[in-house]
Amino acid sequence: MRDIRVGEGGNAAMPLRIFEGKAEVEAVRRLTPEILEADLRLLEPAEFPFEAGQWVSVPFGPKTVRAYSVASTPVSRRRITLCADVTPGGAGSRWFQALTPGQVVEFKGPTGGFVVNRADPRRPLFVAEEIGIVPIRSILWDLYQTGFGRSATLIYWCRDPSWLAYDAEFRLLSRRYPPFEYVPVVRDPVGGWQGEKGEAPDLVERTVPSVQGLIAYVSGGGEMIKKVREVLMAKGMERKAVKWEKFW
Ligand SMILES: Cc1cc2nc3c(=O)[nH]c(=O)nc-3n(C[C@H](O)[C@H](O)[C@H](O)COP(=O)(O)OP(=O)(O)OC[C@H]3O[C@@H](n4cnc5c(N)ncnc54)[C@H](O)[C@@H]3O)c2cc1C
Image (cartoon, rainbow, N blue to C red; front, side, top):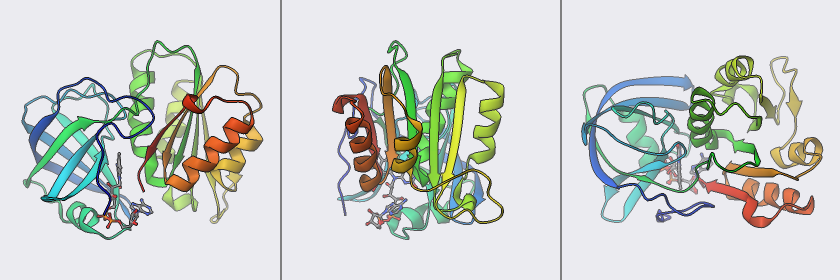
């Protein structure tokens, strides 16, 4: 079992207070057969300040914790939404699947430096592998709903279209905020899929002509993060211009 390191990711940890919090489960939704969302109403503290892209840790024993990125945006401080892929089937997945409205849960946070600095003039490229989309979902809604206005691209990879849990939302976001470009990509184009096919690093290779003025935020499994970073660095990107959040 891997330990969760504070500040894991490509940036320094944010200087926000870290709470030992309690929240009540308000609702649980199934987004796909294996992906669940849970809304938590804060009890202690009553308000939970965080940066879009940060995560909370849930304790399961003295040495066992699991991290969950906050899927909702910092505009909502009294309620946060978490989202999990429960396929791995370990302690975290079992905990998430058993969440029931009215239940009180404990967590610690916010933690993590996978956040966007709005003062950075570079154009963001987001790359998510499956459930790695969660912090990016929070970041994108937060940016555009609070007047970011500049262009950004999301490449959202899943094994097949049924795993694109937030597909409809990102299509809506790109219609509402045209500077936002949404590129879903799947390995298996089942069900009449008309979009991009392949693996995330290959799509980055094909569709990113220049890395000048670009900053990348990559989230998901370690293998994909490494490959995307290699592709971008081969195009001339500086290593530190690739921020990452490694879920597994
Ligand atoms: C900073 C951070 C944020 C995270 N945010 C989220 C989140 O928002 N939603 C979420 O579902 N998970 C998230 N995770 C992963 C989460 O903490 C757990 O690892 C995951 O829920 C699996 O826990 P488990 O106890 O069920 O399985 P474990 O027993 O921990 O894992 C079993 C095996 O599956 C691998 N694994 C874990 N997750 C995946 C996956 N999605 N796909 C493929 N293999 C995997 C593990 O590396 C391990 O080898 C995050 C992890 C980190 C470090």
